[in-house]
Length: 187
Image (cartoon, rainbow, N blue to C red):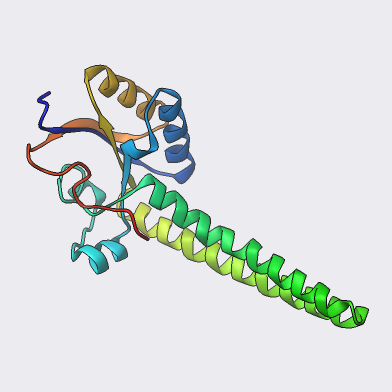
């Protein structure tokens, strides 16, 4: 390993739970969340980076693969799924204010706010599931783990394989490339 190069362990997962479990275990092994990047879904890759891919395998060893940090990926999931409870809570609070005058408007408003929130939650989960399903159809969820030495490489590969990752291998990116080349911290 040369000091100027970027060293990563690459892995492909077939489900979100295995990916998240591997990241939790890697964190327990001393890796930071900033060490993880994921391939963005095809639609974001094309829209933001002008890149299109048919299979994730095409992107595994490309230094300019369109990525997002694990923070951004997790935040996007949280925002999409966290928006609904906030809307439902807001609807309930509004309904409570209206209900001070009389109980009937409160019940109607709370019921309709809850139904609207539940419908929105189902739509967001369905949309998110469709995005994940689309990416899985392209070959899986691609994860890169930044490593500092051979010992970290071994620990990362062991954890990733234990969580069912495929295509687990290390690679070295050419000197001069910025760390996290192609990384997007935005949605």
